[in-house]
Image (cartoon, rainbow over all chains, first blue to last red; front, side):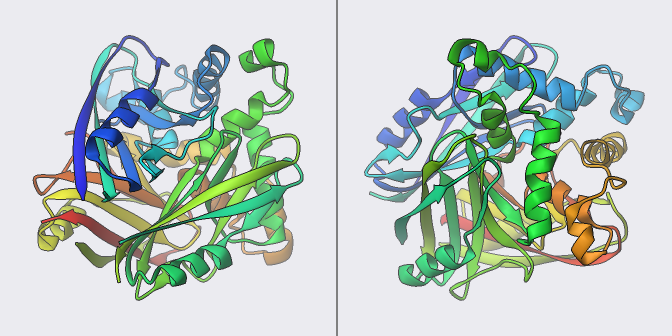
Length: 139
Length: 139
Length: 139
Protein backbone atom coordinates (compact mmCIF):
# COMPACT_ATOMS: atom_id res chain seq x y z
CA UNK A 1 0.00 0.00 0.00
CA UNK A 2 1.50 3.32 -1.16
CA UNK A 3 -0.18 6.69 -0.57
CA UNK A 4 1.32 10.03 -1.66
CA UNK A 5 0.46 13.64 -1.11
CA UNK A 6 2.18 17.03 -1.39
CA UNK A 7 2.56 19.69 1.28
CA UNK A 8 3.11 23.25 0.05
CA UNK A 9 4.78 25.91 2.19
CA UNK A 10 5.45 29.61 1.67
CA UNK A 11 8.62 30.55 3.46
CA UNK A 12 9.57 34.15 4.21
CA UNK A 13 13.20 34.21 5.41
CA UNK A 14 16.48 32.41 6.06
CA UNK A 15 16.09 30.13 9.07
CA UNK A 16 12.30 30.06 9.13
CA UNK A 17 11.03 26.76 10.57
CA UNK A 18 7.68 25.01 10.20
CA UNK A 19 6.26 22.30 12.47
CA UNK A 20 4.85 19.65 10.11
CA UNK A 21 3.41 17.15 12.64
CA UNK A 22 -0.26 18.02 12.08
CA UNK A 23 -0.07 17.92 8.28
CA UNK A 24 1.96 14.68 8.16
CA UNK A 25 -0.33 13.01 10.73
CA UNK A 26 -3.37 14.01 8.69
CA UNK A 27 -1.91 12.44 5.52
CA UNK A 28 -1.10 9.24 7.44
CA UNK A 29 -4.73 9.06 8.65
CA UNK A 30 -6.05 9.61 5.09
CA UNK A 31 -3.80 6.80 3.82
CA UNK A 32 -5.40 4.23 6.09
CA UNK A 33 -1.96 2.70 6.75
CA UNK A 34 -1.79 1.14 10.23
CA UNK A 35 1.79 -0.14 10.33
CA UNK A 36 4.68 1.00 8.17
CA UNK A 37 6.69 4.14 7.44
CA UNK A 38 6.19 7.66 6.18
CA UNK A 39 8.87 9.47 4.18
CA UNK A 40 8.89 13.27 3.95
CA UNK A 41 11.09 14.84 1.27
CA UNK A 42 11.95 18.46 0.46
CA UNK A 43 12.05 19.12 -3.29
CA UNK A 44 14.94 21.55 -3.92
CA UNK A 45 18.48 22.00 -2.67
CA UNK A 46 18.30 24.94 -0.21
CA UNK A 47 15.90 23.70 2.48
CA UNK A 48 15.97 20.71 4.82
CA UNK A 49 13.97 18.43 7.14
CA UNK A 50 14.50 16.78 10.51
CA UNK A 51 13.09 16.36 14.00
CA UNK A 52 13.46 18.74 16.95
CA UNK A 53 11.63 19.87 20.08
CA UNK A 54 9.71 22.65 18.34
CA UNK A 55 9.89 25.69 20.64
CA UNK A 56 10.98 29.29 19.97
CA UNK A 57 14.38 28.97 21.66
CA UNK A 58 15.57 26.00 19.64
CA UNK A 59 14.13 27.48 16.44
CA UNK A 60 16.50 30.40 16.92
CA UNK A 61 19.39 28.18 18.03
CA UNK A 62 19.05 25.96 14.97
CA UNK A 63 19.77 28.62 12.37
CA UNK A 64 22.39 30.24 14.67
CA UNK A 65 24.27 26.92 14.77
CA UNK A 66 24.04 26.48 10.99
CA UNK A 67 25.25 30.06 10.42
CA UNK A 68 28.18 29.49 12.83
CA UNK A 69 29.22 26.21 11.18
CA UNK A 70 28.67 27.37 7.58
CA UNK A 71 28.76 31.20 7.73
CA UNK A 72 26.91 33.35 5.17
CA UNK A 73 29.93 35.69 5.25
CA UNK A 74 32.49 33.14 3.98
CA UNK A 75 33.54 33.14 0.30
CA UNK A 76 32.19 30.04 -1.43
CA UNK A 77 33.18 28.75 -4.88
CA UNK A 78 29.46 28.53 -5.69
CA UNK A 79 29.33 32.36 -5.60
CA UNK A 80 32.10 32.82 -8.15
CA UNK A 81 29.96 31.31 -10.89
CA UNK A 82 26.44 32.11 -9.70
CA UNK A 83 26.61 35.33 -7.65
CA UNK A 84 23.28 34.53 -6.00
CA UNK A 85 24.57 34.88 -2.45
CA UNK A 86 23.29 31.51 -1.26
CA UNK A 87 26.35 29.24 -1.24
CA UNK A 88 25.92 28.76 2.52
CA UNK A 89 22.22 27.89 1.99
CA UNK A 90 23.12 24.95 -0.25
CA UNK A 91 25.73 23.61 2.14
CA UNK A 92 23.56 24.05 5.25
CA UNK A 93 20.65 22.21 3.58
CA UNK A 94 22.92 19.37 2.42
CA UNK A 95 24.34 19.00 5.94
CA UNK A 96 20.86 18.55 7.53
CA UNK A 97 19.43 16.63 4.55
CA UNK A 98 16.20 16.68 2.53
CA UNK A 99 14.68 13.35 3.61
CA UNK A 100 13.18 11.96 6.81
CA UNK A 101 11.57 8.55 7.44
CA UNK A 102 9.36 7.92 10.50
CA UNK A 103 7.69 4.70 11.69
CA UNK A 104 3.88 4.34 11.84
CA UNK A 105 2.27 1.94 14.33
CA UNK A 106 -1.45 1.53 14.88
CA UNK A 107 -2.01 4.48 12.54
CA UNK A 108 0.15 6.83 14.63
CA UNK A 109 3.54 8.46 14.11
CA UNK A 110 6.03 6.97 16.59
CA UNK A 111 7.46 10.33 17.65
CA UNK A 112 8.36 11.40 21.17
CA UNK A 113 6.12 13.89 22.99
CA UNK A 114 8.64 16.70 22.43
CA UNK A 115 9.79 15.55 19.01
CA UNK A 116 8.34 17.40 16.04
CA UNK A 117 9.00 17.13 12.30
CA UNK A 118 10.46 20.45 11.10
CA UNK A 119 11.16 22.11 7.78
CA UNK A 120 13.90 24.75 7.72
CA UNK A 121 14.37 27.35 4.99
CA UNK A 122 18.11 27.81 4.36
CA UNK A 123 17.76 30.10 1.33
CA UNK A 124 18.05 33.88 1.61
CA UNK A 125 14.73 34.91 0.12
CA UNK A 126 11.07 33.79 0.30
CA UNK A 127 10.40 30.53 -1.50
CA UNK A 128 7.43 28.34 -2.39
CA UNK A 129 8.31 24.84 -1.16
CA UNK A 130 6.93 21.47 -2.19
CA UNK A 131 7.32 18.52 0.15
CA UNK A 132 6.45 14.98 -0.86
CA UNK A 133 4.89 12.72 1.75
CA UNK A 134 4.93 8.98 0.92
CA UNK A 135 3.18 6.50 3.22
CA UNK A 136 4.04 2.79 2.78
CA UNK A 137 2.64 -0.07 4.85
CA UNK A 138 -0.22 -2.36 5.76
CA UNK A 139 -3.84 -1.23 6.18
CA UNK B 1 5.21 -7.34 4.40
CA UNK B 2 5.75 -5.04 7.41
CA UNK B 3 7.31 -6.23 10.68
CA UNK B 4 7.91 -3.96 13.69
CA UNK B 5 9.70 -4.31 16.98
CA UNK B 6 11.09 -2.04 19.69
CA UNK B 7 14.62 -1.92 21.06
CA UNK B 8 15.02 -0.48 24.55
CA UNK B 9 18.29 1.00 25.80
CA UNK B 10 19.40 2.39 29.14
CA UNK B 11 21.97 5.11 28.57
CA UNK B 12 24.23 6.42 31.32
CA UNK B 13 25.98 9.57 30.01
CA UNK B 14 26.43 12.21 27.31
CA UNK B 15 28.18 10.66 24.32
CA UNK B 16 27.52 7.02 25.19
CA UNK B 17 27.29 4.90 22.06
CA UNK B 18 25.67 1.50 21.46
CA UNK B 19 26.39 -0.88 18.58
CA UNK B 20 22.97 -2.07 17.38
CA UNK B 21 24.00 -4.52 14.62
CA UNK B 22 23.20 -7.71 16.53
CA UNK B 23 19.77 -6.56 17.71
CA UNK B 24 18.73 -5.15 14.32
CA UNK B 25 19.97 -8.27 12.50
CA UNK B 26 18.00 -10.46 14.90
CA UNK B 27 14.78 -8.51 14.19
CA UNK B 28 15.38 -8.77 10.43
CA UNK B 29 15.75 -12.58 10.78
CA UNK B 30 12.53 -12.82 12.85
CA UNK B 31 10.67 -10.82 10.19
CA UNK B 32 11.42 -13.37 7.48
CA UNK B 33 12.01 -10.52 5.00
CA UNK B 34 14.57 -11.52 2.33
CA UNK B 35 14.77 -8.36 0.22
CA UNK B 36 13.79 -4.86 1.28
CA UNK B 37 14.74 -2.23 3.84
CA UNK B 38 14.90 -1.78 7.59
CA UNK B 39 14.30 1.59 9.23
CA UNK B 40 15.61 2.31 12.73
CA UNK B 41 14.20 5.37 14.52
CA UNK B 42 15.06 7.02 17.85
CA UNK B 43 11.96 8.20 19.71
CA UNK B 44 12.86 11.51 21.38
CA UNK B 45 14.80 14.62 20.45
CA UNK B 46 18.15 14.32 22.29
CA UNK B 47 19.66 11.12 20.85
CA UNK B 48 20.59 10.07 17.32
CA UNK B 49 21.43 7.17 14.98
CA UNK B 50 23.91 6.53 12.18
CA UNK B 51 26.64 4.19 10.96
CA UNK B 52 30.30 4.18 11.99
CA UNK B 53 33.24 1.81 12.40
CA UNK B 54 32.44 0.91 15.98
CA UNK B 55 35.74 0.99 17.90
CA UNK B 56 36.75 2.81 21.11
CA UNK B 57 38.76 5.55 19.36
CA UNK B 58 35.96 6.70 17.07
CA UNK B 59 33.41 6.44 19.89
CA UNK B 60 35.44 9.04 21.76
CA UNK B 61 36.06 11.13 18.62
CA UNK B 62 32.37 11.22 17.75
CA UNK B 63 31.20 13.05 20.89
CA UNK B 64 34.36 15.20 20.87
CA UNK B 65 33.49 16.41 17.36
CA UNK B 66 29.87 17.10 18.33
CA UNK B 67 30.99 19.00 21.45
CA UNK B 68 33.45 21.06 19.36
CA UNK B 69 30.85 21.93 16.70
CA UNK B 70 27.97 22.54 19.14
CA UNK B 71 29.63 23.23 22.52
CA UNK B 72 27.86 22.50 25.83
CA UNK B 73 29.38 25.75 27.13
CA UNK B 74 27.69 28.08 24.62
CA UNK B 75 24.56 30.02 25.63
CA UNK B 76 21.53 28.69 23.78
CA UNK B 77 18.10 30.32 23.55
CA UNK B 78 16.62 26.96 24.59
CA UNK B 79 18.18 27.46 28.04
CA UNK B 80 16.58 30.83 28.64
CA UNK B 81 13.12 29.25 28.77
CA UNK B 82 13.88 25.73 29.99
CA UNK B 83 17.04 25.90 32.12
CA UNK B 84 17.62 22.19 31.69
CA UNK B 85 21.20 22.53 30.44
CA UNK B 86 20.69 20.44 27.30
CA UNK B 87 20.36 22.96 24.46
CA UNK B 88 23.48 21.48 22.84
CA UNK B 89 21.99 17.95 23.19
CA UNK B 90 18.98 18.89 21.08
CA UNK B 91 21.06 20.53 18.37
CA UNK B 92 23.65 17.73 18.23
CA UNK B 93 20.90 15.09 17.91
CA UNK B 94 19.13 17.06 15.16
CA UNK B 95 22.41 17.43 13.25
CA UNK B 96 23.04 13.64 13.19
CA UNK B 97 19.35 12.75 12.83
CA UNK B 98 16.96 10.21 14.42
CA UNK B 99 16.35 7.91 11.43
CA UNK B 100 18.41 5.41 9.44
CA UNK B 101 17.34 3.14 6.56
CA UNK B 102 19.46 0.14 5.51
CA UNK B 103 18.97 -2.31 2.61
CA UNK B 104 18.28 -6.03 3.21
CA UNK B 105 19.29 -8.61 0.59
CA UNK B 106 18.97 -12.36 1.00
CA UNK B 107 17.92 -11.79 4.61
CA UNK B 108 21.12 -9.88 5.46
CA UNK B 109 21.90 -6.24 6.23
CA UNK B 110 23.98 -4.77 3.39
CA UNK B 111 26.53 -3.12 5.71
CA UNK B 112 30.30 -3.02 5.21
CA UNK B 113 32.53 -5.21 7.41
CA UNK B 114 33.58 -2.19 9.48
CA UNK B 115 30.24 -0.40 9.33
CA UNK B 116 28.03 -0.67 12.40
CA UNK B 117 24.68 0.89 13.29
CA UNK B 118 25.17 3.14 16.33
CA UNK B 119 22.95 4.95 18.79
CA UNK B 120 24.43 8.02 20.50
CA UNK B 121 23.09 9.62 23.66
CA UNK B 122 23.38 13.42 23.34
CA UNK B 123 21.49 14.27 26.55
CA UNK B 124 23.30 15.12 29.79
CA UNK B 125 21.76 12.52 32.09
CA UNK B 126 20.84 8.80 31.96
CA UNK B 127 17.81 8.08 29.80
CA UNK B 128 15.61 5.12 28.89
CA UNK B 129 15.50 5.05 25.09
CA UNK B 130 12.97 3.44 22.77
CA UNK B 131 13.99 2.70 19.19
CA UNK B 132 11.52 1.54 16.55
CA UNK B 133 12.68 -1.01 14.02
CA UNK B 134 10.46 -1.39 10.93
CA UNK B 135 11.25 -4.08 8.33
CA UNK B 136 9.54 -3.76 4.92
CA UNK B 137 10.02 -6.11 1.98
CA UNK B 138 9.43 -9.47 0.31
CA UNK B 139 9.61 -12.82 2.12
CA UNK C 1 7.18 -4.80 -5.09
CA UNK C 2 10.89 -4.68 -4.20
CA UNK C 3 13.66 -4.25 -6.80
CA UNK C 4 17.37 -4.08 -5.95
CA UNK C 5 20.51 -3.31 -7.86
CA UNK C 6 24.11 -2.30 -7.09
CA UNK C 7 26.01 0.72 -8.37
CA UNK C 8 29.81 0.42 -8.38
CA UNK C 9 32.08 3.47 -8.32
CA UNK C 10 35.85 3.88 -8.50
CA UNK C 11 36.86 6.92 -6.50
CA UNK C 12 40.27 8.57 -6.85
CA UNK C 13 40.64 11.11 -4.01
CA UNK C 14 39.34 12.69 -0.81
CA UNK C 15 36.36 14.88 -1.62
CA UNK C 16 35.58 13.41 -5.04
CA UNK C 17 31.87 13.64 -5.82
CA UNK C 18 29.69 11.69 -8.25
CA UNK C 19 26.30 12.72 -9.60
CA UNK C 20 24.13 9.59 -9.37
CA UNK C 21 20.85 10.88 -10.88
CA UNK C 22 21.17 9.06 -14.23
CA UNK C 23 22.08 5.70 -12.71
CA UNK C 24 19.40 5.83 -10.00
CA UNK C 25 16.74 6.97 -12.51
CA UNK C 26 17.68 4.09 -14.81
CA UNK C 27 17.26 1.55 -11.97
CA UNK C 28 13.87 3.06 -11.07
CA UNK C 29 12.74 2.68 -14.73
CA UNK C 30 13.94 -0.97 -14.82
CA UNK C 31 12.00 -1.69 -11.63
CA UNK C 32 8.68 -0.71 -13.19
CA UNK C 33 7.69 0.97 -9.90
CA UNK C 34 5.33 3.94 -10.55
CA UNK C 35 4.72 5.23 -7.01
CA UNK C 36 6.87 4.60 -3.97
CA UNK C 37 10.40 5.29 -2.72
CA UNK C 38 13.98 4.53 -3.66
CA UNK C 39 16.69 4.10 -1.02
CA UNK C 40 20.37 4.56 -1.91
CA UNK C 41 22.93 3.26 0.59
CA UNK C 42 26.73 3.48 0.69
CA UNK C 43 28.34 0.24 1.92
CA UNK C 44 31.32 1.23 4.09
CA UNK C 45 32.06 3.84 6.73
CA UNK C 46 34.18 6.50 4.96
CA UNK C 47 31.89 7.76 2.17
CA UNK C 48 28.46 9.40 2.21
CA UNK C 49 25.35 10.31 0.20
CA UNK C 50 23.02 13.28 -0.06
CA UNK C 51 21.47 15.81 -2.43
CA UNK C 52 23.04 19.02 -3.74
CA UNK C 53 22.99 21.31 -6.77
CA UNK C 54 25.73 19.45 -8.62
CA UNK C 55 28.07 22.10 -10.07
CA UNK C 56 31.87 22.53 -9.79
CA UNK C 57 31.73 25.36 -7.22
CA UNK C 58 29.63 23.50 -4.66
CA UNK C 59 31.61 20.28 -5.23
CA UNK C 60 34.68 22.15 -4.05
CA UNK C 61 32.80 23.92 -1.24
CA UNK C 62 31.40 20.66 0.10
CA UNK C 63 34.73 19.04 0.96
CA UNK C 64 36.13 22.42 2.09
CA UNK C 65 33.30 22.71 4.61
CA UNK C 66 33.80 19.13 5.83
CA UNK C 67 37.56 19.70 6.20
CA UNK C 68 36.91 22.93 8.14
CA UNK C 69 34.41 21.31 10.51
CA UNK C 70 36.33 18.05 10.97
CA UNK C 71 39.95 18.85 9.98
CA UNK C 72 42.32 16.17 8.64
CA UNK C 73 45.06 17.83 10.73
CA UNK C 74 43.43 17.28 14.13
CA UNK C 75 44.54 14.37 16.34
CA UNK C 76 41.81 11.75 16.54
CA UNK C 77 41.65 8.81 18.97
CA UNK C 78 40.98 6.57 15.96
CA UNK C 79 44.57 7.23 14.81
CA UNK C 80 46.15 6.11 18.07
CA UNK C 81 45.03 2.53 17.47
CA UNK C 82 44.87 2.35 13.67
CA UNK C 83 47.42 4.82 12.28
CA UNK C 84 45.65 4.85 8.94
CA UNK C 85 45.31 8.64 8.77
CA UNK C 86 41.57 8.63 8.10
CA UNK C 87 39.96 9.48 11.43
CA UNK C 88 38.46 12.60 9.87
CA UNK C 89 37.11 10.53 6.94
CA UNK C 90 35.05 8.36 9.29
CA UNK C 91 33.63 11.34 11.17
CA UNK C 92 32.87 13.35 8.02
CA UNK C 93 31.04 10.38 6.46
CA UNK C 94 29.03 9.76 9.64
CA UNK C 95 28.05 13.44 9.79
CA UNK C 96 26.59 13.41 6.24
CA UNK C 97 25.27 9.85 6.49
CA UNK C 98 25.25 6.73 4.27
CA UNK C 99 21.55 6.53 3.40
CA UNK C 100 19.14 8.60 1.30
CA UNK C 101 15.44 7.95 0.52
CA UNK C 102 13.68 9.73 -2.36
CA UNK C 103 10.01 9.60 -3.44
CA UNK C 104 8.96 8.17 -6.84
CA UNK C 105 5.75 9.37 -8.51
CA UNK C 106 4.57 8.33 -11.96
CA UNK C 107 7.87 6.49 -12.42
CA UNK C 108 9.96 9.63 -11.82
CA UNK C 109 12.23 10.79 -9.00
CA UNK C 110 10.63 13.75 -7.22
CA UNK C 111 13.81 15.85 -7.18
CA UNK C 112 14.09 19.57 -7.89
CA UNK C 113 15.59 20.75 -11.19
CA UNK C 114 18.85 21.71 -9.48
CA UNK C 115 18.83 18.89 -6.94
CA UNK C 116 21.09 15.93 -7.67
CA UNK C 117 21.92 12.78 -5.72
CA UNK C 118 25.62 12.83 -4.85
CA UNK C 119 28.18 10.39 -3.51
CA UNK C 120 31.19 11.87 -1.71
CA UNK C 121 34.44 10.05 -1.02
CA UNK C 122 35.71 11.04 2.45
CA UNK C 123 38.60 8.54 2.57
CA UNK C 124 42.18 9.55 1.76
CA UNK C 125 42.95 7.04 -1.00
CA UNK C 126 41.19 5.58 -4.06
CA UNK C 127 38.42 3.15 -3.18
CA UNK C 128 36.04 0.80 -4.98
CA UNK C 129 32.56 1.66 -3.70
CA UNK C 130 29.38 -0.39 -3.70
CA UNK C 131 26.04 1.39 -3.39
CA UNK C 132 22.77 -0.46 -2.90
CA UNK C 133 19.68 0.87 -4.60
CA UNK C 134 16.35 -0.49 -3.32
CA UNK C 135 13.09 0.48 -5.04
CA UNK C 136 9.84 -0.20 -3.14
CA UNK C 137 6.35 0.61 -4.38
CA UNK C 138 3.41 -0.07 -6.69
CA UNK C 139 3.75 -0.92 -10.38
